[in-house]
Length: 218
Image (cartoon, rainbow, N blue to C red):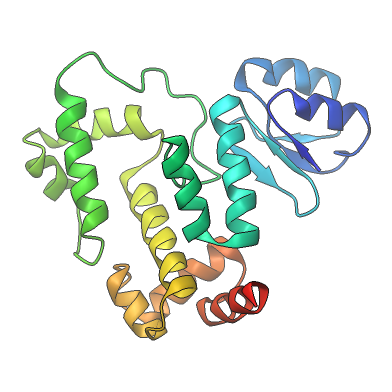
């Protein structure tokens, strides 16, 4: 069952969220906590996956949640195709901040910022750094960091990890290259690093993910 945005209130009223973690629109968080104190509300999460029950924040986060469901059942490649059709980001991490005060600052900087981020996504195998992207965008480190946080709602480290994990998922689903090669292409540097981050994020090892995904596909 899925409660999108204020649909979380419906699930809570039905008693289905008691003792569970949940997310809802940030503007209604206080009312939710007053009404359902037995639910562990995460005010920052875009969506919460509790296995059999999922909840999400507002409209855009609801799309993220639905894409997560597609990704969980059919893989990252299919989810990315749908995201491209919808013209939305293919993957925003579950823990990414849902409320960004000013996602599109009224300056010319966002174009330079976006170009730098697109370049980073195309070069995940490189040892990327915040300083490197700031220089590529022609901005000071302070300005780049400030605008980056406003645009993405997360840190550079987490943003980069999210994209590397998404790249690893696609490679494991669609390619036949070794896990070692996947780690190299996605920019993890070693299979140990890939395994640690991948298992922490998805509760399954890269090798098991590939095997499980192919069994589901079959």
